[in-house]
Picture (cartoon, rainbow, N blue to C red):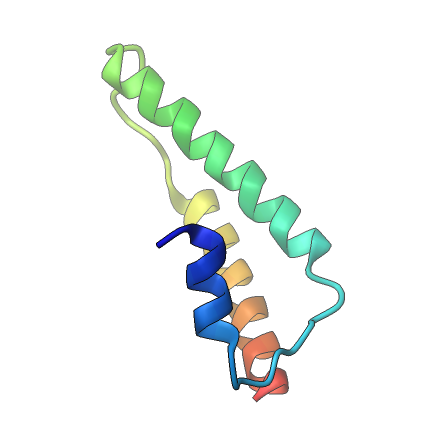
Length: 75
């Protein structure tokens, strides 16, 4: 089954809701993903051994809160 076939099968008979305003959240999520990938590469190279993750955790918490709020509004 192709990805297109899978998506069509999942969407058949269901209400599809388009949510406007996710551009900023998606952009932030991509940026955080790039940062995590860079940290992982540096750690694997042995160039980084300790990461202060408080800022990362705070950013993800904020992002998760925003996504939860949107999910509640769509339901």
